[in-house]
Structures are given as structure tokens and as C-alpha cells.
View 1 (cartoon, helix red, strand yellow):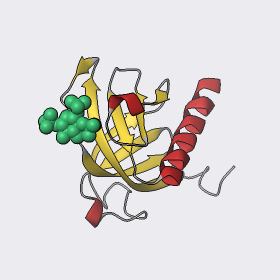
View 2 (cartoon, protein in one colour):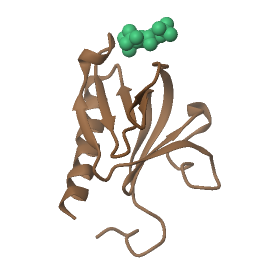
View 3 (spheres, rainbow, N blue to C red):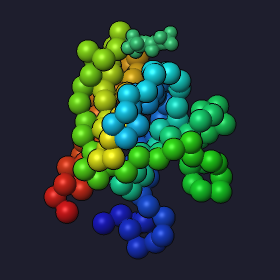
Length: 128
Ligand code: I3S
């Protein structure tokens, strides 16, 4: 258990800058549009913020900034997806609702850490 587990504040697992594009919404394919996104993994959710320049790891909390969107990781699927882009280090996240995102970083170690951390949360939720 963590210091936060008894409070209303979910545990912040990870935060950082990744390139992001949504490629499907409810199973319907979307046109790719890559942009940098401040990504925060907190509790069971991956939260995306639009303006990375105005974000810091401590400013993700509601009230301090406005999330662009948020993804429920319960039942989600994660796959490396270098076949879906000319960019390197791309993985695909698919939600139970059929929303699909590609996330990418030029930094190998960074994207591997994100993949591992998100997969750990998905696995934990699968066991519940
Ligand atoms: O899978 P695609 O269609 O080759 O993806 C590229 C396009 O979405 C392109 O946009 P336009 O077709 O609107 O010009 C993007 O600029 C590229 O980044 C996409 O490819 P990559 O390989 O970067 O995911």
C-alpha cells in the first residue's frame, strides 16, 4: 500500500511527453494526426494533456490543468505496432470501447518503460 491509498488522490504512476495519435474511435478508423502529448498514468487511467509546455509532473491534478482526454485501461490491449507507422518505437493501445491510440518516442528506453508500466496496470486490472 502507498501513502496515497487511503486518500481521495489516486497514485501517480508515471508522467511524460510522448507523441500521440488517435487512429480509431469506437472501432471506426480515424485519420492519423500526430502531436506531442503530456501523458499521465494515474490509477486505472491514462490521461492526455494538450499543451505539454504548460504541464509539469505535479500539475496533472484536476483544477490545475485541463485534460484533453482520458483512457480507461481496464480490459485494454497493448501491442508494439511498428508496422503501423514509419516512426520507430510505436505501440498501440486499444480500449474496450474500440478507441485506438498510437504512442511513440524517439527514445528507446523511455518508450519501453511506458510500455512496461502500462502493461503492468492492464495486467493488475485483469486480475481483479
Ligand atoms: O499511415 P499513414 O497514412 O502513412 O500515416 C501518415 C499520414 O497520416 C500523414 O498524414 P497526411 O496523410 O495527412 O499527410 C502523417 O503526417 C504521417 O505522420 C503518418 O505516418 P507515420 O508513418 O508518421 O505514422
